[in-house]
Image (tube, rainbow, N blue to C red; front, side, top):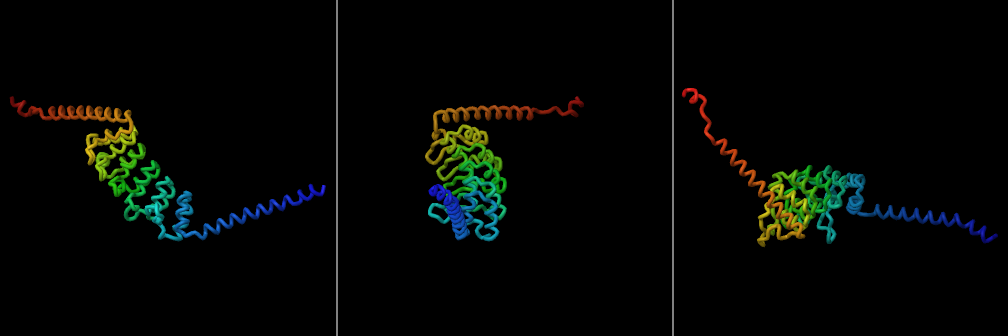
Length: 270
């Protein structure tokens, strides 16, 4: 009886001890977070997708609007680079509203914009927001000569690609004709990925399947699969037939317009 009573008596004390340990851990974590450098707290808030905390830190430390990552593998990515690569739309909205992209888009060590990282990762909502906010960032090139359209094509993100082509400042046709330092176009990258929808979108926008890179290879030579190669060849043939049909129709229209019309006054005089 004494052992049972003793065990029952000490059980609440054990619970109190556990409670005090839990509270102590929480306080220690709070103290640790408060001791962090503001730049580290801001980056953690971006990782956590806490837009309210990001806004609060920026209000106290407005100079941290870019906050480049100085770690060995950080590539000096800014807050917007990080948020865009993670697909955190609310964070992107807060950063842009606070002037992150003024007067020009921020670039990392590879001269990449946040839009490029979002396009490569396939974050549709972020790409739409950044493209709509600043269309001039769409054709910007990194150190390899690649732009956001190429990144989307390489990643096989058809919806992202269509958004970029819609907002491209010089038009979709010009966007798909661009090439990197190796002469590779978006069609080269899409072919290597093997995404059939992306191939169709690029060709419909005016991509040149005959264009060669600096090694004289066409896009079809980089086909990821036999299926992608056959599909691309068939698309090229189909588009060429449509172009010829349209050209013939235009010629017919011009010939009809060139026919001499009878002068009504001359006809009346006769």
